[in-house]
Image (tube, rainbow, N blue to C red; front, side):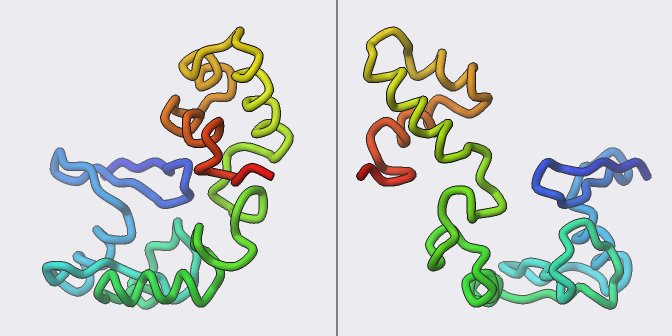
Length: 134
């Protein structure tokens, strides 16, 4: 097996020519197939962990409730912007993107390239759908 780490912190493995999340592969090697509609959750909240005793299968609903309870969701109180560990842009960068776009000298694509984010994300930023205006 070969492996790598995603930028989200989760491990990735290649097994038998197939690519998958390391924690899911670890769970399956220890416990068998993941039930349909279930995800593999970490009791240790450590994304690269592959210790089978730290992993359990649960419905996605349970995973979302766990994320919300621990403040790791985009909709959780105080977890937007830089307070969210998944955020790739600072508040200053968000304001720069808006100002540059409003100047008329930059396209969404150009801003996405400059700030290393997808142009869809830039579009959300300039329209105030992400990191609300005001």
